[in-house]
Image (cartoon, rainbow, N blue to C red; front, side, top):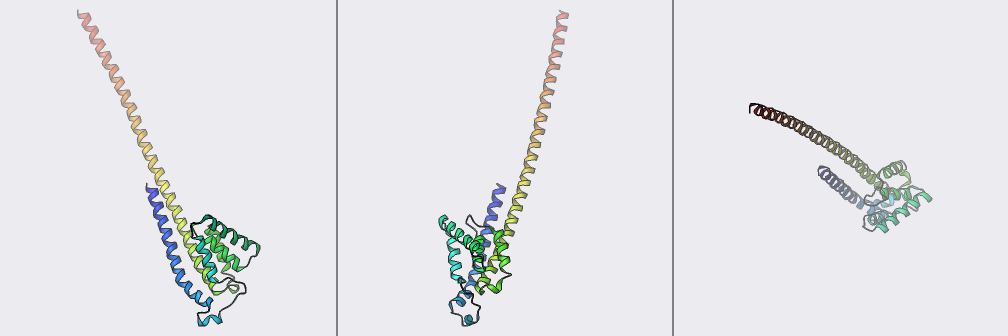
Length: 210
């Protein structure tokens, strides 16, 4: 029961952290979308990378990953993986890294996502401001998820050790009780044998007196 309670609590903590990070990311995303759409006056001064997807494309795909549609999740993962492998560049790598960093689907891999995002942060000159912002937010989110995962494993290991220690103590107590019961049975048998011997002697004496 203790292990299940801690596991449930950790799952809730991870979920709450992810939601908080995504909400924080959404507030920052508004600025990028304005810039990319041309709503911001300063958009004209921003770097433009030919062929780079706009922020809306990344976010739409991540929204699809958050659905409960396994077929759609598998399609998005396979497509992003193939693009990153066949036409490697900062945009395809970022797309694949964001897919890996998103929890809730079979292809999620925070460790690989962290590695790719860290590599991307050394190539920011080849990325749009929106891509840099996305990479930064998801790198922070992934690092936090990895830390939470490590803490969850540590708690599970600690719980397992505590359970094993408790089981060992219970087994030791049972062994002690069983050993005491065996000793008491032997003592009882010895007492019964002595009583029988005394009774037999008394019976013989009475027969002799007769």
